[in-house]
Each structure stands twice: as C-alpha cells, then as structure tokens.
Length: 246
Ligand code: ADE
Image (cartoon, rainbow, N blue to C red; front, top):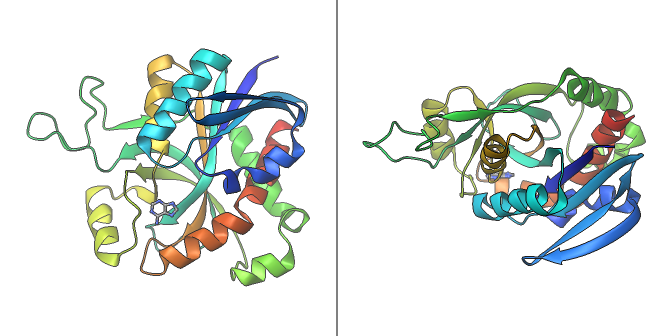
C-alpha cells in the first residue's frame, strides 16, 4: 500500500485529521512530531511543518527520506489576492511560484537558479477536484451552519489556480497590487507551498496542495486568518481528504 505524507504549517490546520488517525505511532525528529497511522484506510504520515519555506522544505525532505512517502499532500489556509475569491473558498494549486525569489539580474525574477523554472506544477488530479466538489455538496456534515455564518460563508466554491508563496504574511492592498502585477495568474498567497513543490520536484514525488481562503490578505488579515485557522480550517481538510481517500 502506498504511503502518503500530509503536511500543514500549523497543528490547528491538521487537528481534525489527527483526531481521525488510527494505529498511531509518533516519531520526534528535528523539533517536529511525525504521526504515522491509517486515515480512512490509507497509510499516512501527518506532520505540521511550522511556518515558512525553510521549515516546510526541511519537513518535506524528512518525509521523503526517513518516512519513505510515495506522495505528498499539503493542506492549509491562504490569503486571497484575487477579488473573486472569498473566505471559505477552496484553491487546488496548479503552478506554485516563490514570489520572494529574485536573483536578478543573474537570473530572471522568480526563476529558481539551476532549476531554470519560475514555477513548479502540482500533480493535482481530477480525483482531488471531485473530492473537493463532493465535500462542498455535503458541506454541513463537516462545517456547522453556525460556523459558516460566523465567517459569512454562503456559497463556498472550489477553483484550480496558481499560488504565490513567500516568507511574508501579506496584509496590505499595496502588496496585493504588487503581487497582482508581478504574478497575474496567482490567486492566493501563503508561506510554504512552492518550497514543498520544489523539494517534491527534485525528488520526483507527486505533490498536491489544498488551500482554504482564510483572509483576503488585506488589513483585516491579521484578525481573519487566526480566527479561521483555529476553528474550521482542519474540518475542510478532513472533508476533502475523506472524499479523496474514499
Ligand atoms: N496564509 C494565510 N493567509 C495568509 C496571508 N495573508 N499571507 C501569507 N500567508 C497566509
């Protein structure tokens, strides 16, 4: 049976999955706890990487080398930089950019030196899109009406889109405008995805990423983000992955 590594940046984003994990064994390595077990009858290793590109790259490398995972799925929250996205919407990442990578004039802006790539692609499948749609069709099995109202979520949607990652929490309209200008196809920002994508690319491991919009990367983001991440983010992960693994 294949083994799937599941990463989130924070424990809060993965807690509902941890609660469902069976036959758990834990391993401490490099200041992280790796939870191995079965999740909906699939062999998995769950871990929260902590924030940022370095933390998530190290965790990914550890999952590949020490836990022999065959595939990696990242799940967590993101800030929307596309005005069509609302809090509670789901983004399945397509191309992952490091928006703070700039070795110009030696290399083009955003180009990852040596790899000669400005972005890395995910191996998101039709199956993951179907799982996210199935989750939305049974939304209130996972997210209470009360919680949805709390975040003014009325008609959550799923899109496949590009993601911009960087070691910055984005919380200003000026920065959103700059990112829209630099990377017009990017619909949301976060701090890990492109680093995980790069490690998976270098080790030739399939990688997919699910990001739930927790905030709109504006001056309300510092309030919206923790509120969302601490309450319903991991229930989204649970609902989507339950359908994905079914
Ligand atoms: N993750 C969730 N919201 C974010 C934001 N506004 N900036 C960076 N990472 C995020």
